[in-house]
Length: 153
Image (tube, rainbow, N blue to C red; front, side, top):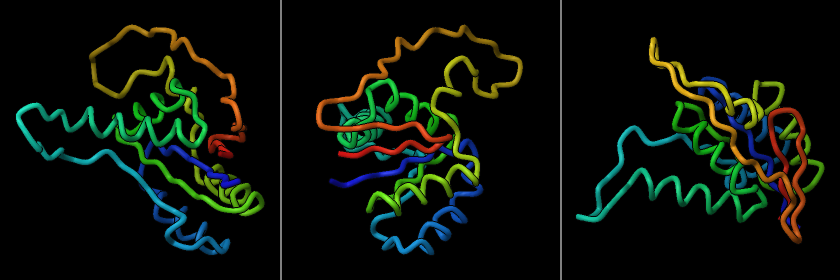
């Protein structure tokens, strides 16, 4: 059963170091990837909504590996706010070590995004409850471990 560690970083600065250190754990490069929100989105047609398409694809991928829809939306929000994601897929022990490495480099809890407004200067906004569903999906397990999450699928 594949297992994936996902770490959200508010600032993409440490991501390259995280990836290098994860690779030293023995992960093949193809099993470690990073994701930022693109600076611009290519319009592919009249009815194209590229940012929405990007977020829908991300949410679909995250729920496929075991994230709840609320968690997946929080990860998308983290990217929208300028953050970056790191994914590492492999054996249980390696993935646990990768999650620990992500946490040492400052991976944040997706719940930290709830109730915290993005840095928008003097603009203020309302905090809305997320209606979070923390239940596990059938056949999948989720574990919280610091900021990085472990998903077995």
